[in-house]
Amino acid sequence: MNPALALYLILALPLAHAIVLVMLPRPPGLRDVIHIGFSALTAALAFYLLNAAAHDIATRVTLGRPLQNVDLAFSVEPLGALFGAVIAGLSVLHAAHTTGFVRATGEKSAAGLMAFNALSAAAAIALAYSANLFTMFVAYQALVLVSSPLAARSDNEDVGRSVRTFLATLLAPAMGLFLPAMVWTYTIAGASDFRAGGILAGHGLDPTTANVLLVLFVVGLSMSAIPPFYQWLTATTAATYPALVSIQALALLPAGGLAVLKVAAFVFGSELAAAALASHILVALAGAGMCVAALIALSKQDLRERLAYSCMAQTLAAVMGALLALSAGLFAASLQIVATACAATTLLMAVGTTAAVTGRRNVADYPGLGRVMPWTFAGFAVACASMIGMPPFAGAWAKVWLIIAAATPGAGMIWAAVLLGLASVLTFAHLGPLAAAALAARAPTDAFKKPDGASVLLATPVIIGAAATLWLLVLADPLASFLSPVWTPRT
Image (tube, rainbow, N blue to C red; front, side, top):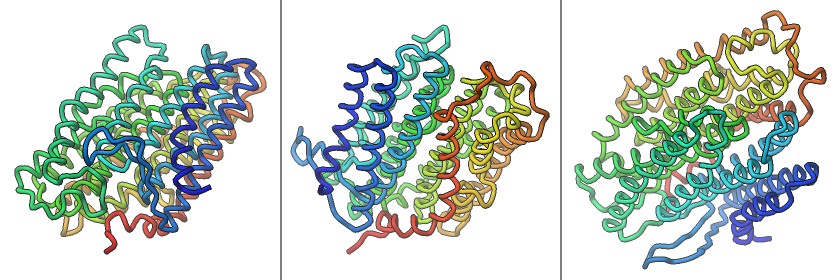
């Protein structure tokens, strides 16, 4: 197999995955094997492409050319290959956990849930491999549309309103802000293909144009939860747990952070310095939003709502790093998105496991559960520590790099470093005591709805997710070397 064929397959396979699931919803055993098997095959292709990127094998495929010099094209470069592998790898754990969840809860239309989870991950992977702004825009729209049925899988009585909010706050900014910015960029540069160093580099952008373009791009990418367009996230907090993993941890939020990162690295590049005013304003907006989200999370008693705001705060930290116009900021943002995806996926799977076997979903119900579900809550605790940024867990490295990048003389944003520190304290306040109480308090006598507790399919993905979060501890330096071509263009 060559990388081009692997790239074609990784784009086509999820569609076959969803079709086969819908056509063969029964028997449940066959359905589950199909779901996990297709997810594992997609992950294998993603890691093959990651290896190709590590060996500097340039790969690009074009599916169409709707306009002159505008292709629907996908390519393998370090940033996209890394995030494609992270999303695909975590999707295998998510697939296994979903099969355990639907069996434990008797979820209706389980095949449909699995199919849309697969399509959401596929659209996020397509965004990661997008070779230009046009393809990223198409993948972004596709991700919104295929994820909307997940938002509809809710125990909220007003499901229609939730879905309308979800679609409106994601599609309207993309069409009204991101699309004009993309067209404007094309008129300036005569191309839309991503390039290390920036599409706009060397075109002598005046400060007004650079500032307006940056605002249009970043605010238009509302999937990154940038204020004020974050209501799509809070509208989905009543969704079923496997859907929440896709929305909050695995597909939508990471894709939003990645899209902003690609704009900063591949569209602006060195020209980001010309948009200093907009950068400072957007960093302040993201920093304030991050702290407010972490504070709101502290007030939420439903774990789904608490984790939604917590994941939002983590993504906004990545947005801050991407806008610092420094190599250290870009690396910090990359590491932050990867660490958050691993930790948040683990957290949400642990919460889903707990809800499935105990029926408990509120903060007040968690004390002592670690005594009766030690493996699940060991993974839960590791993921919480990483989200907080406690040394030596993976999230700590990302936070340290973010603070260093913000405080360097080149950025001159010590206040942004202070906001990052404050958000970490607030994250500790809403996750630290929760994990501690779960592990240290007296065990409840009536924890399980069923005496057999959590199945292997529910507990094992949480344990492996926590192990992946820990593994990131040793990967910071290799990742920096692997991603260096993103911010250090080769001549």
